[in-house]
Image (cartoon, rainbow, N blue to C red; front, side, top):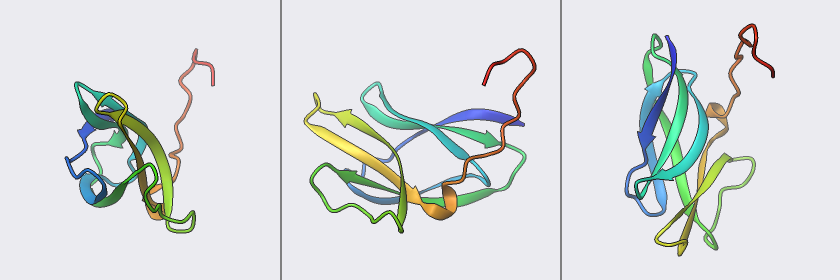
Length: 106
């Protein structure tokens, strides 16, 4: 079943981490909720879970090249004193084929 799941990002500051999510999942949004960075992900819960690599890079810190990673979004923490930028590898950056439901506009 296709649905949207929320994942709370780990408290890694900056650095790399792995989240297990259904194969073919697509990150829709990166934002802070209740003081914690989160991602909202379109998933097909019938798919097996696979590890997915992410990295958080702070403003002014070395970032991955465009060949290495795909930018997903940015978020603010600590009264805007920290801005984190979330990346994933290109292998996981595809856009899913989402059929438009009758009555919806693209």
